[in-house]
Length: 263
Length: 274
Image (cartoon, rainbow over all chains, first blue to last red; front, side, top):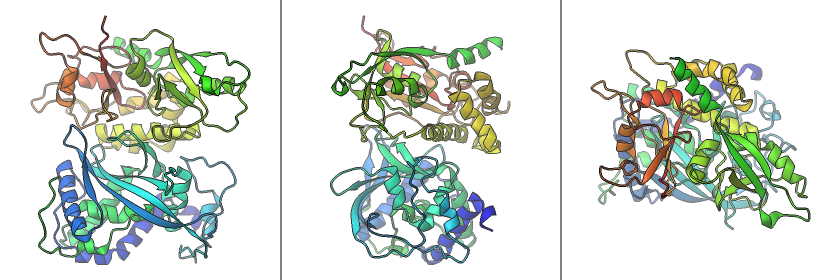
């Protein structure tokens, strides 16, 4: 059975799983903004970001809007500390064996034994045994891709001493549940890329499949006549894979608040 | 037109004479001779510098190290085509292009890592896909099979013009009613700002139906690059090392002067002061 599970099936299965777990999120989402289903133009993007930012300020969730010098373009930014199991001391019972070879960073960091390790009865959960944890600094940027008409998530990660994490290390901190989905991407879903506005190396989640899975989710929401904040919804689907959680409170009706920041 | 096909060949076979020298601080007991090479403009540094690595590793004791390149203090971004790096940093300088080779102190705040050619392949294919998203809403690239994608990559990697273009011509097609691609894949580079490049949506045809030119694109995206009447020329606008006329239709440029990644890479550099 595992043999003919294609990339598409696995990917959508995980997305649908998240959809169901996010069902409360979907159903409780108060009217935030209407989006022309599936297509996000730049103006929509900025509007969604403004709303997200407004809610973030109320929740003190740490998002800010950064402007690019000399232009009207900008992006959402957030830094966060993240505690992860120290790979040296922790083990995960359903975690694939580490390959002994030099990892070929782009094509696949997860060794071939990975998929075979999860048998059909395995619910994919990872039991992390006792070990010390490591605190890392993550910095997340949400940009708009005009080529794909979607948001894109860029991020970088550092140890507390300021050393940049390698792609291999970042990959190792992706939760095993997401690894299965990401590893089968034909386009190396998680890779290093030059930040299009800052010019520095970041990691990013490739946006070419975003429209596809957002379509699934948005048509479901449309059927229920639930207007959605595209950016918020997208973030709640892709963020957790790289340690960025979106609290449910984002979807609870906001109280009358302070003036919105000007984006 | 027969002439147009020649342009494709001229672009593909463009070369830059380059001299590679080892960073003097990394010199060992034995003096390292500089290494000379003709670099293809349309390729990428990691694909064409295996011999450079072998040559310098002979005099260094290092193993399993990541080689990187620098020109006059600027680390060279391997994920840009060679020709773009040259035009941006060293056009109007005396040939050969002098590049310094490093094996230590990899600048990970400036450069992406490149542990193998499959990383180059991923970047290359990623650009092609993005270009097709702009040109055809990804329809053409998605209709191709995996082996077709591989053919594009192998054509580039092995310097096989015919193999590459047998597949790439599909990415250059458009319906006659449209008059051109949906949007033109382009990037405008300049050294004067932190921003690595300008890339936005731009149609090849105006709403009235007239063809947009290179001048129209610059006027919209980077008006400073254009010389106003009576002014002295401040900038050169280079594509593959030449200055195309500003009146050239953008659609034509996109079909003939794009790089193999299907993007028009345009460098705006200060005009030489004689």
